[in-house]
Length: 251
Image (tube, rainbow, N blue to C red):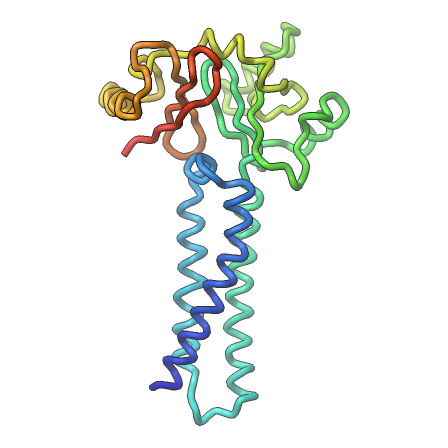
């Protein structure tokens, strides 16, 4: 039993190290708050962690026996590790393809833009028309403004596409503009915390209390919803400088 427990512990330690090596850079580079929450990556991560930390070490515990020759034991553990690495690679690719690239202000809301939101054809157009704001494989999340184009025909086409569930302007980097350029428009769209849509009346009251508890104004137009695939958040700005002050989530 001691031999099996030792094998279990070593395998569990190796699995934890492998998981940390993969998830650590993804979190630090792309999924830092609020990316992890907005991308709703918790489910993928829990499945990934469960597959990596539970079946592998348990199987090692089952097959580990002091009566086995070192060569046979190493072979068996190698097979288990290979299956674990396959599952880890699959989950890592899913997280990589869904990594946050932008926090886009468009219309009256802030929205998370993930890597798979941007069509390859749109990306090619953006490289030709708006290279400075095009994402690269190493790009970490940026705050940008995504206004609708002034051309009426293109404007209407994008609006119709968004209404029908197709691509919206936030997934078209060719129309992106620097964050600073959108601040005057952002100022006109800010609301009081309890006037921001995307939340129910009860949720607005809860968020308002959190804003007040943080020592921030609740009687000024300083807030906007920040949405993604998870539940929306409330972003609060300094009314004077328009610097992002805090982000609140529903508890």
